[in-house]
Image (cartoon, rainbow, N blue to C red; front, side):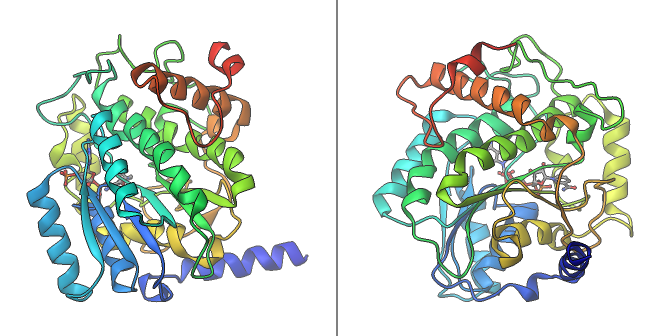
Length: 357
Ligand SMILES: NC(=O)c1ccc[n+]([C@@H]2O[C@H](COP(=O)([O-])OP(=O)(O)OC[C@H]3O[C@@H](n4cnc5c(N)ncnc54)[C@H](OP(=O)(O)O)[C@@H]3O)[C@@H](O)[C@H]2O)c1
């Protein structure tokens, strides 16, 4: 009975939560990837407005400078907001950005892994110099590398502001396309996790990366439990951003339908979409909710401007700890092929999982 009461209290809190409910964030340093546009920009703005030191990550200096100026205009001209650049598809750039972060000796309380793209225009189906297909690289491998390289900093950062340290992976309903809850089939190319031999860079590829994000949450939450770092997934719901404008997908009809939905009166603004990210990143309600999911995993299309907490995502593989452990280890091993000096800070690469089918 008490458990039901608690769940109800929690649900009530989460469905009425908006960015106005963000507490004073002074003393927290928060890095938001892909904060030069869309829901990432709004999330970074909300944190800056509440006093956090915000690192706006982007890949384009001009756009990044504009985003910082825009945030300062609404937060305050003295807000601590600064830009760091790295194209997530280029591992060298990611490492350089982390080196820069280390030199500045900043702490890191919260990392929001938000940046993502779908079949980037003009680069559809391309592979990086490490042989990783471009959507896989930007939405999973680059963010994974960034997370692992930043982890030593986060681990030694003392918690502050009454919240646990957090890593938030931004996912999508797309994860369910790659691994439908009912059919129990999955579209993970287990023997080709770089998608070297996979040339279809469109909706399905994007959907796979959003499932990868969820699987990373499951395994990282296991690995980082002893460090008291909560790893959480967040789903913005369908929000009006330029996400589709940047895509070059084969699936024109479905993209058009989704874009039309997002732009319709039942779609959400990017400010509304950002609420789930903001909540997952800094709400004290999420303390200890390691491995949880914020945002509606049912249809996932709308959060109606709220931040619902759900215990688990729908994609079955994301709830299979052994599959997630296998996946995570295999993908760490792929990063190690590209960078032999890479030692994951979440824990060693487990060879038995790398070799398993
Ligand atoms: N909008 C939705 O309806 C929706 C629904 C479900 C999930 N999501 C998820 O929400 C997140 C944000 O999407 P959004 O709709 O806000 O998209 P968006 O407006 O296009 O913003 C994406 C951000 O990621 C950056 N980015 C993309 N590729 C990058 C790379 N290779 N290196 C560095 N930065 C890169 C973009 O930089 P530029 O500014 O240079 O382009 C931008 O700052 C994504 O994880 C997406 O999967 C969105």
